[in-house]
Picture 1 (tube, helix red, strand yellow):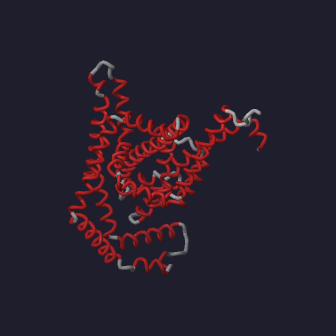
Picture 2 (cartoon, rainbow, N blue to C red):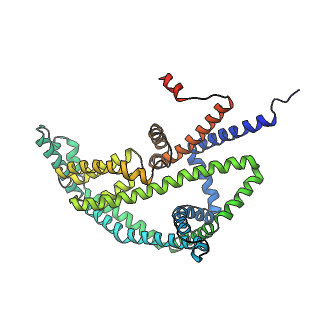
Picture 3 (cartoon, rainbow, N blue to C red):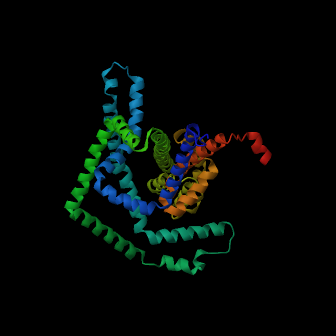
Length: 396
């Protein structure tokens, strides 16, 4: 009697089962992220040097690859620079990272702290100005209503803001002092981070060997076909995440520079603070820019009502520039996820993991979408079914 589960059928079914199992495990991991993260935390405690090294290497790998590719294109294979392109790429990446840290520490952070200090120290007058300017808008449009008619507004203005701010600043200063006072703990954490950094340099210098050894270990445990599938989807996942993260970071930097310079030119208040808010909120698709616009408008409303209106118009103009020119060229279609799934993923991941979930929603959903699409296509192919555009049109 012929065995139904012959070798050919097993070869067709096995990849589909592996993809389905991998998808289920990924969904389970995301749903139970907090519990799994606690277990992982215990394990990481034992291998934290390796973990920090891998994280740092993953962050530095993207700019290093770009620099190494440029060196390979510009230099001849016989040249000394080409032979040492990996070492030069690592050195140039570290120099660029150091310059970025210096710029942020010397220019961005002091101006940001200055804006926040000014805002916090005058929070009572800040609220009064906002409500007065809202009243001006009501008067301009002939609306017979004043903000002071709302009892909670008076209570909000009359709260002891200065005392509350002083208490918060005292708590923060004591916490910072306590951290610096515990020199042993500080040096221990610095030592762990520094060791991880050194380890990351070794990983970057010889990453091909590390990946080859990892592949051998997985192959010895799981077999050739399973290892091939695992590394195929691991490569896809890495590509989606690395492209998304590098693209979003580049876009955030461009947005900060663009908004900071143009806000300075147009004379809007709080340019450093608002530009930083816009850059940070750009990591959350759809909802982030809207929230950033309203926060910026409220901050400017404390100075002038008309400027707040002009800011919203100005923001919409620059948003069109970003959507049509900056985002497609910097981030592009790196995740390959339809718009409807982007919105749905933000809601679902945001519900499970909060703000962090909204940030990672798009790349995570893109990975799940890619796995599910391939699984569906494999099942359709096995059943010899083909869905054409004509079939879709007939279903409308």
